[in-house]
Amino acid sequence: MADVIPFDQRDGALWFDGKLVPWREAKVHVLTHGLHYGSCVFEGERLYNGRIYKLAEHTARLFESARILGMTIPFSEAEIDKACYAAAESQGIVDGYVRPVVWRGSEQMAVAAPDSKIHVAIAVWQWPTYFDPAEKLKGIRLDISSWKRPAPDTAPTQAKAAGLYMICTMSKHAAEARGYADALMYDYRGYVAEATGANIFFVKDEKLVTPIADCFLNGITRKSVIELAKARQIPVMEKHIEAKELPGFSECFIVGTAAEVTPVSEVGPNRYKPGKITETLMNDYAEDVRRPVSQVKLAKAG
Ligand code: PMP
Picture 1 (tube, helix red, strand yellow):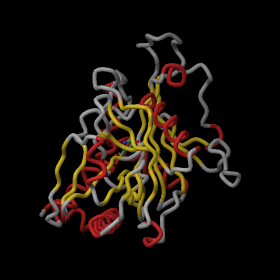
Picture 2 (cartoon, rainbow, N blue to C red):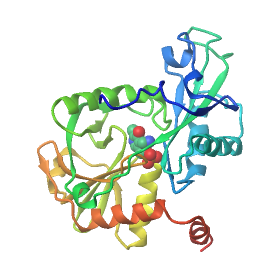
Picture 3 (spheres, rainbow, N blue to C red):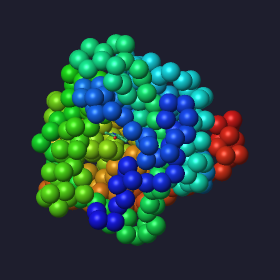
Picture 4 (cartoon, rainbow, N blue to C red):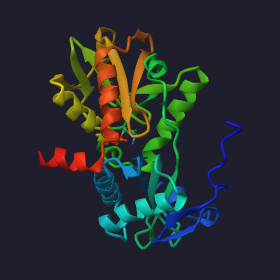
């Protein structure tokens, strides 16, 4: 990790509460509600060829996450969309990662902080793309986390809220320490849920099987992949998946804005061989994210 420039020591500008500010000066005070009490939601978006893939969906989710946590974003969705592009343009980035974040400020340092100011920042940075499909098709190895995704009446599971990532970081640290790339998390009932920052799919008898997103994020990539599969006449079944079903699947892959479609070769003791369906959807997704705007409009109209 020695060659990674720390995120507070980069140059350029980012969008902060309505204007572009120098990157290194985009600071918050240590006494900030979002830091102490987790009142913070965010998005993760990808910019491909100068276009943010599914920006409207991401911005809508940001507002919904904030609403769930009782935070009113002091901008319109259109203003946030524009700000995402302004942040990208200011960095001269056409292929990268976009990170909008919303948090409660420093006005009140107690559990209840209804009069806190709601802040918004958007930063854009370079994101390496995976060039070698053959290498990618070997698949990554997933550990099985000891942490479970919480019940919807235990945590705001449909919000992309910072607090929900506490167990994801702990799970991923534990997996990496054991030599794995990531971890599969079960949910509070013991059903297969997702990886620490991506949804999961399996293949059985030429059909896709994926967990019902009833206690974790119904990812934008998950929805895109389901559409792409349907366009290929690949049947998709959303169901509760038990641990005992894992050995019966032939292929496995994870999906997310950052992960895109990433083949998986192992989940704990289970072995998978990334095959035709995984490869097809990996390629279809790679094409979809870079589809020119005119084609996107045509696809929507048709
Ligand atoms: N689950 C978790 C926990 C995530 O962090 C992400 C990434 N945002 C996803 C699923 C996939 O969501 P999306 O496809 O919208 O990026």
